[in-house]
Structures are given as structure tokens and as C-alpha cells.
Length: 403
Image (cartoon, rainbow, N blue to C red; front, top):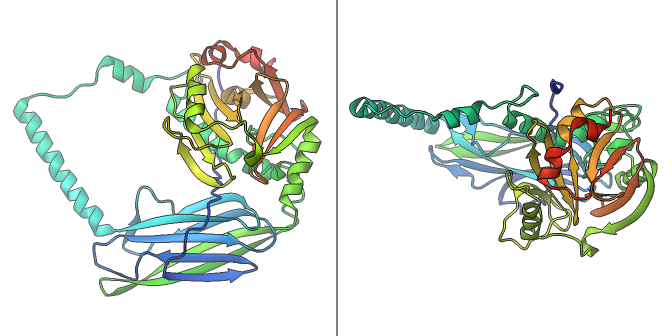
């Protein structure tokens, strides 16, 4: 069995973070109820100092904004640290919510000095190797592991990266798809579910807007401008109402709707790790994106020592045939997405593996759990007795997709 090649990957990182406290050295601009702020950790820097800048956007417009692109412009003679991202995107920011990003700018000459040291160290290493006449070699086992490929023709890390991007970008693709056609996949976590049902009218009811703001700092007596730009669409539809509409239209029955904070059926990080470990899902770390109150945290790894609770967790599993699965905990229910099988399938709906006839999904809009019996036109459920790593390994494409 050969998997289809993925030609394009869409990345939309929903970064619904609380705006951190604005520092003293800041500039801001408010337009149509959208407040854009850029702040620096200080106003005067020495030549070798790093500049730490925080960019934040707060939506007080009374309407949801979508297709948000938040960008920090890198000053001349500086470059971004490896941990920073100059451009951050969000599918939407609800009214009353915010997103923020910290950028660390490093003087270019620091990188040059580091490179010179690395070159020097490398030369010393080469001299030492010549002197000792010991050349490190990879074992056959390591080489095999590095080069191992699956029946899809893609290396496992590349497949995982692809599924990660697809998981983040599926909402964006479906948001831009008209006529209700399947894009890449519908997530168990129905983030921005409104986009799945309002794709036909969203663009018509939106207006693209931009805001820019700059703050001046001094580096070795030379002035630099720290600039932040944001581009977004101002949407008229009520996003939470659209979520409800999505579930109404795509469910045979809505069994229950519960606020996450009022639901006792939520795992702590250590409970979730134990739950997954007992089912054999230990190869990849368990991740989460949201706090118990629905705040987006950016992807973080669960800790076996933590009692913090989260509405949803996710990990990955790679079967012996190379099939890639994403495995979710939503509340205290488990579901598995045969991601690579779904990509290969010509079905109009996504297939998910479940232990029950109902599907529990999470939406950050309202911070709620929805338990539904989905329509087969939206999600096809394959019910098994228990989801374990062995069960997923034994399931074949034909058993899951049924074609």
C-alpha cells in the first residue's frame, strides 16, 4: 500500500494567550477596537546586548477577527533567536481575547564571533582526531534507524511533521473551502468550528485591515525602530453561534454540552500520562494546548509530576506498516485519528476510531465539551473495544476505511 504524497502543508498556529503586562518602554495603537502594542525590556542597550521585545494584540472590537497575522520586523544588523518566530498566525481571535509573542533580537556580530569560535573548535577537534587516529563511526543499528523508511516512501519524522502541520492547518483549509467539501481533516478538537460551517459567507462578510506600531530604542548610541504589524479580517458572524450551528448541522444527536470548568471528567497531566502509558502510547510525548479555563498556551509537554488539568491531550503512534495515528484524550475519553489513512482515503468524511458510539470534542469557543453522535457525512466512527497501541497496530487500512 502506498500513501499519497502531501504537496502542500498549511500551518495555522492558534495562539490565544493572555496579554502580558505592558512594560514601560512601549508604543501602542488602537484602531476599530483592536489594540496593538510593542514593548522593549529597556530603551538603551550596549552593542552586544540582546533586545527582548513583546508584541501583543488585544481584541476589544466587539466582533471576532480572523486570518490574523502578527509580525515583528527584525531590525537591521540583528537576527532572531532560534526560539523566536517573526510571523505568528491565528485562525481567529474572539472579542475580548488576545494573542502575544516575545521576540529576542541578537546582534549579528555575536553570531559571527560564535561562528569563529565554532570553526576554531572544529579545527581543534580535527587535529585531535588526527593525533589519536580515532574516527567515530555510526553503528549499523544507528544508520538503519536514521534511514528507516515506511511503505509511504517518507521517513517517520517527516510523516510526523507533516501530520503536525496538517493538524494545525486543517481548519484553515476547511475555512477556505466552499460547498462543504472535505479539505485535509476535521480535528477531534473542533477548534474554530465556525469555520467549518461558514466558509461560504465568511469572506463576503469580512474586511481586511492592517495596523502598524513602532518603538525607538538606542543601541550603542544608534537609534533603531522596533516595529510590529498586524493584518486581520473583521468578521460579522457570531463565532459561538456558528459553533452551535456546526454541531446542529453535523450531528445525528447532541447528547450533551458541558462547560469544561464545571466538568469533573478531566485528567491532570500525570493522570493523562498514566492513562496513555497503560495503553502502550509511550513512544512520543503527550502534549496539550489549552488550560482548564480555555486559554491557549501554545503546545507544551505534559509532566508526570503535574496536577494541572487540561481539556485535551494528544500524542502520536506509528504502526509497523508506517501508518501514522494521532491519539487524543478529550475530557476522559480517548479517540484515535488514522491520519495517514485519512489522507489516502477518497472518503468525503474523516474516519475516527472510538470506544463508544458517541464522539466527545472540545471547542475553545465557550470552553465546552460536546458529546455527539456525528453524522456520517461529517465523521465516520469505527468503534473498538479498547484503543491500545497493539489494537492500532493490528488495524489495516481496509478495516479502518472500509473501501
